[in-house]
Image 1 (cartoon, rainbow, N blue to C red):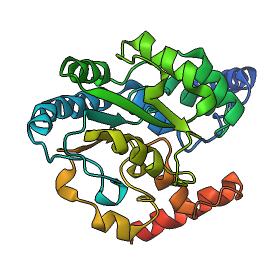
Image 2 (cartoon, one colour):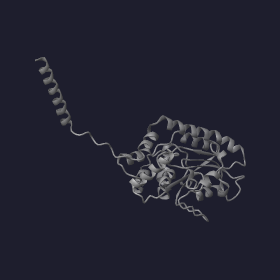
Image 3 (tube, rainbow, N blue to C red):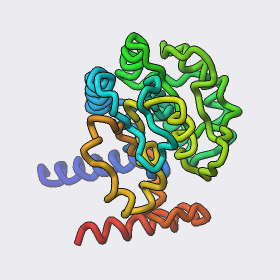
Image 4 (spheres, one colour):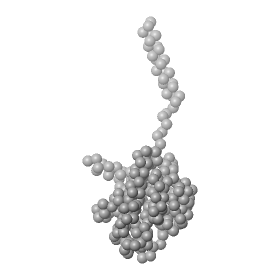
Length: 285
């Protein structure tokens, strides 16, 4: 009798658990995969990212005095220097996105909505002028201004977004006097065609200024086609890194990513991911 009761109880328990499972229904589907999810989360939430940014800008601030004291100090590559920098007023060149302004909200929305980059959505975001400053960037800019050093913001935001960018920078406390210090994509430069790069705008700054420091998050912020050409990377003045050139991390986007699939954006997402996987497989050998 005891054995029969035990078996009956176990059958009732199993049936009850099955009924509960049926009531709950199928497990919810996972969100769709997005290649930038971890990168956006790291940049938006990690203490390590904030410390790296502060570390970079504090080191750049220390370099200001050394660069001012040396009249021959110049952070432009020689092939981008049209005339001698000696005697020219001092400036610093910085990129904007993921260098002085943090677009985490825009990037997170792309992940949540499972979409790639969209130019219209990007312009709408820029015009809100709500991007917060990268940690340490405002203090660096104010330190430069206190030394009489101007800052030129060389950005691949289109020139039609200049006023919104100026408003955002001012709202965050950057000492930008007027829009002429923001050189967006499409800025005309005589006798120079830069395509998608920034070299012509750096040359333009260098025609009237001695460039003390360059700060960016991609190799193209420092030299022409650097991310696409191993020869250019090998020829880079490596002793400038951490002295004249200061690099911030950007694991979300850049030519490093498109290089994984041959910069061919005509490929669909699955094909791009397949090529990225092939690169990782070669690294794992």
